[in-house]
Length: 600
Ligand code: M6R
Image (cartoon, rainbow, N blue to C red):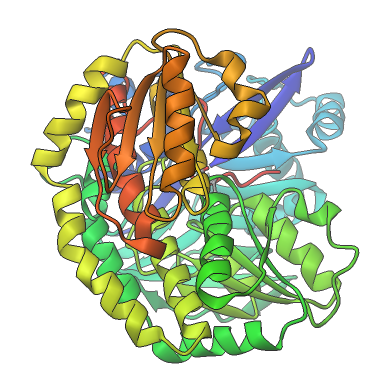
């Protein structure tokens, strides 16, 4: 999760954080520590834990979770209540003081927080006037002091409620108080889920942190406040509410690396299974979505990053298969683009996490205009699922690596199904995709990986890589560039082949690596582009069904028509992974990035 944490001397500190709390009958410290490890993809600059063992004990420091807790031994602390936090400040100071948990003046209250307390400066000034002493520069610390201030005339739980009334911004908070074995939590525009185990309760940013202990979850709604004492109570707007307990459909093994060194490689190799799951979609939901598309006056696909590339790819697929025009817009641009929406418009949002703030803002803007919103989402129970009129769940399983890989190809497969269903050929789409499954196993196999490693060796010291595609391969080129730059930090730029002569060719020098996606539909034009590149000295890498003399390196990917993009992106995902490894980078934890970008 990405959160802008605080602003001091015009310095913005941005963090990606994971939070977790446990209260129950088991050893809370070890459960919170192992949960934190599974949230480490959310942040890894500093970490901390707070627990109650007679007194409140807070341990925190700078570093990755293992580093922090190898310096600080907490294994001897026996308690059944604890909270933890893992953080990564990407701009500004990473200090022990700024690490979570934060405490009040008396060190009796501890809190962990994700989000932005927008009015923290005013709150902090008021609290300082009242005698509070702050230890960190964070916005989050005001929460602990506000609770302390309110506790002058209220109990812990009511003080927490009062504190929330004063906070402006977004938050997921978990708090504990030394003198009462209670845990309180709240969410507003930041993800927070409750895990219901037979030995206690978890409150966490994400399900994998407690999946070893329970598959029963409560997805909290915005504005929900949780109080856990002997049992669990949830309030919204001051009124107690009932929330359903859901069962997570995947198991603990799926959220583990297993035999793989990194989640990225594991998720890349899961793609054949993910396509199988996509094909097994409920036909009725597909047909309902198609009906909504047929009845709509104006259809808009919205998403960000990789999900946006799926949207763009989807528009080409719909154009080709269904002869239907679908508009595509970055979700963050959509609020500037909604003026002509009517209640007959249909917005289809695509998102792996279902928590991307920009995508949520887009659908909210659409709903204000009365438009209908359908979402294609991977994470069940996410905010996007809850706020859409209709949802198609991807069932791609947990995607832990910050980079979207399997969720992308799953989205593409679903878009192929929808486009074919639009012209009453859903079964044809299913058989086409089924035929590809064995081939996708091959594309993700060790053989393919070894072959692509040779290319990675050649490209590992490149400064720039340019990637070209036409038609369906244009969005693939954009996605390929995103994959390479996110994880290897090599500058990569994707563009439509036709744009080459309109400016980009000026960048080509002797040896500049250029990747060219080819297909039966675009062959002659894209091969001309490849020749133009070659004559300027480029090192040309071809990816497609047919080799050509112009290529210095060729990766054969068989022709799969509308499903070309599913197959062709896979070698690039592998290449990006190999580049990261060869450059000594951790592919699961690329710098400055967050799995779900939950702030605008
Ligand atoms: O969870 P979402 O699909 O809504 O996320 C959208 C983007 O933030 C995401 O695709 C991002 O671009 C990834 N880092 C891509 O690998």
